[in-house]
Length: 484
Length: 138
Figure 1 (cartoon, rainbow over the protein chains, first blue to last red):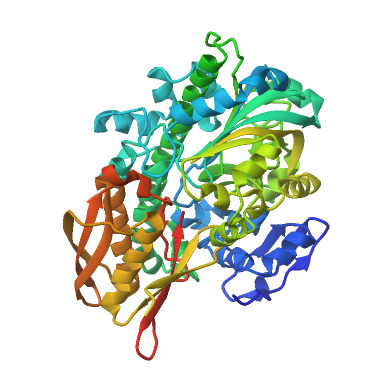
Figure 2: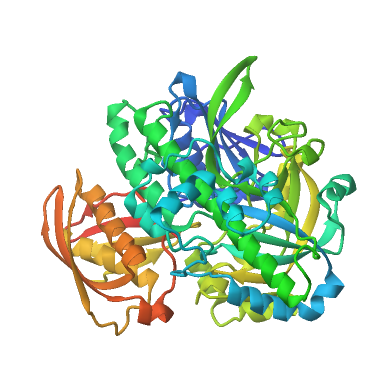
């Protein structure tokens, strides 16, 4: 593949600009949060071009943004953020959310310390692997009629909590309380229902995972205290999304939105950027369907967490609640949200696309749980399975990125390149030497997901922290990993 | 002629598909997708299914065809491995695919494909064959 030779102008230590003069049709500049190393890597694929492509979306405000975990996607780059002005004809793009609608992460604390966990780690990882459905074609725990499924799509996490999966309090610590308002089940096709009906409560495959971790460094004692975390403490992180239901919703709307380009006179450089005004019939229909898929994903992660809590209780032979497995937060990183911003002194309603980017509200934001008013929103950043993950908090400064920050380490190698690099090696064996026990149902998942396939999450987080988009609270190290 | 080859794409899986005719290009694209999803070696058919699809042009028809097969894989649990496009015009595709139920072949499953994307999609006519690059979201 030829290198990308477009302009990347250095703004400061953490920001690089693609000027809108680069390409006809760009309405705003592109801004990429990165260091020199990441910028150098970006020359070798088309992620930067995708930042420029997104800048052509009607109604886009300020900048087409990309976080330091940016990598080459389809249409939008992974790590892309774009906000459009709804009143000014701003658009919504199904491709700007992606197939895995509300792919996201949740972090759970425990009362356990690393020393207590270690002797039981093997039992715990095996039990998690057995009890939590994962991998391609897996079926879930929740079987519901279509009528009930419609309710689940509107009520999200609340529906599963009412059916015995978790506790009321979990909802308080989930973005949108696990059910975004305005979901329209009628806008979800029969086919999407069909693809989703057996998959509630399944992890999925690929980069989806469940990880038992230990906190190995605390940067902000006060915030860590609020979240009930301290060095040496054990946490549980899980990463999953809306499964087949979300994929089918995106698939159908991506297809039908191609027709909207001509209908609304929109010119974009790639069909995968197909979009329609948020306020159009099509825009509202997609938003209603997307919210259903988002609620399904929150319900799914709630169910997975409940199953995992059960496994912990079984392995440690304690009664529910004794392990203090409280949800710290659950946050989406593939979603479009309608949010209010002050733009040059005027309040505006924006449609913020976060495609592989995490919402990061600063302290005092009205949508945060009361307990987190002073800390800012918890931001959960999973790394690769051999290095670290982070808990960050949102900042007021992140308003410049529409309260968005990175969502992970970001891939560096393609899956084929990773498999090639791992040929003849035992990734599980290498990780075991580092004290990490890994299990996966996929044949090649461990090679595809090998640590070296990812950028170093520590460097990615240093950039968002340095740019002021988020603040470090603590760093985790994996002990046990279940991959799909 | 090779049916397809994989190329590097950072986040997803890219395939370059070849076909002596457009029909063959569509057949080979379907084969490539299922070859990524599952181990097809030695699979014998028990289910055949007919397809009829419409779309405004060949490129969108190609994605419609792949998505239709993918939907059948997930909703009806069929691993397809043989494809015959019987009719292909600018906007209509008729085809038959043979496959086998996933249930007794679960150990064959490899990679979950979420969807075929439109990204950079362009069917190119070479001197005596066709080719197209397709990115699958995995």
